[in-house]
Image: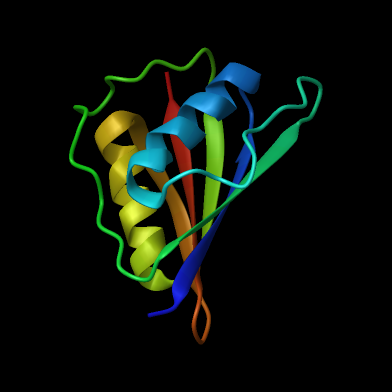
Length: 115
């Protein structure tokens, strides 16, 4: 069984908002390579490597996690990983789907998480 890589790019909000988004995904994808750490960055990234089979986490309820400002999140990886990440974020945050792009083996989805 091969591993799946999910790349998460975050912009907007503060460092704690970025960390909260990444922590939300840890329940599905495990520990990322690193938590976002640069307080002055305008774009932050996290990379998860997880088992090939991932499923969305069904808790907490939508809007249960609070953000200080809107955060744009782009998730990129296999279609299954992108779907699991998108569903997990939609369960934890109020989200607006900003679009999706598909390639041969990867997919990219952009979500806007709102406070």
